[in-house]
Image (cartoon, rainbow, N blue to C red):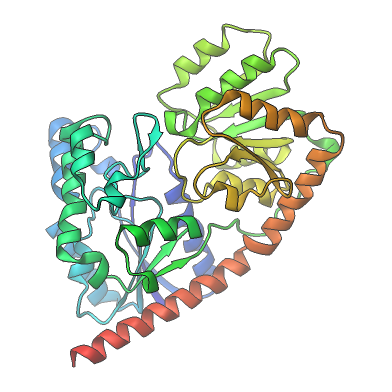
Amino acid sequence: MRILLVHNFYGSSAPSGESQVYETEKDMLQSRGHDLAEFTRHSDEIRGRGAWGAIKGAAATPWSPWAARDIRQAVAHFRPDVVHVHNTFPLISPSIFHALAGMGVSRVLTLHNYRLFCPAAILMRAGHVCADCLTRRSVLPALQHGCYRGSRLATLPLATNVALHRLLGTWTKQVEVFIALTEFQRERVIQAGLPADLVHVKPNFYPGNPAIVPWADRKASVVFAGRLTAEKGVLVLVRAWLIWGASAPELRIVGEGGLRVELERLAATAPDVPIRFLGQLGGAAAQDEIARASLLVLPSECFEGFPMVVREAFAFGTPAAVSNIGPLPSIVRQGDNGVLFAPGEPQSLLAAVRMVWETAGELERLAAGARRSFETLYTEEANYRILMAIYAQAMEASQRRRDADQ
């Protein structure tokens, strides 16, 4: 099969899970003999260029005639069966789906977030879950509140993008298949207007069959890995550890973000509480932290897609403690491969983690469940089968459209 992969990488200073998924799927397809080509852009092209870069990114977000022209040329040259798009923001834009109409290719779009309907992409406003733009099918709430970066001006191009492509019917007429990461996400985007028969579920996966660190060799530590931002709930995590006090296990925080200074200042108020900030680590080093920990904690306060760190934890046989919000309770099952707690509540987080930490044998039992989840649901082999079935459905749908146009 000939596949053109399309992706806009975010800035190199901010590694993203979306880009990890893109690279992992690319490697999977290459290893199985598919003929691949790539159509990519990098946000570094506009970062550091001041006002001109911001203007270029804002102008390209809803409709980029340059990307539309270039992708038509790429398709005419490569002649793929499938064009699989991961991210178009900010430099590629959904204009490419219209540009590909009539070119005999099947268009597939992975929904890594909610940007098709939510200018902020994460369904969160002022520290709380907000789905107004989805349920009302309007961008007015986002414009009113300046949901992207707290700015109405910054929100405007993204809101224009949402409104324009709803008006043009891009998502009902110009894409053969959408890939949602969880059933929870599928239900939300169908509620927002995507045709139910076009939305299929394919979770993220971990490649290969990683070795498990024996339980006796694990660190007596808990790890958080992710952006240090409000929606990730890391402030709640640190507050829970401060309540636990000096008897708490070491909390190892991997990642960078706008909250790091505040988090370090908060942790410094109780220097006897074992909290360590490791900063941004490379992929292998971050995964080693997860593999050697006794527990991963993810205190998200927003609707996640499918967190890469949970995928990694299960692959390495590390149980997870996560917020009972969005798709997380369907991935991390209470008492099977991890535990749940109420989002935004330090005392709930603390109670859940202390219960498994202080119950003899409980973490090791949950670790076995985590590895079973990986072997059953999140291996490369299982994911490849799902993806090939989705591509087949996309090609059947595009053939039906061609037949109807004749």
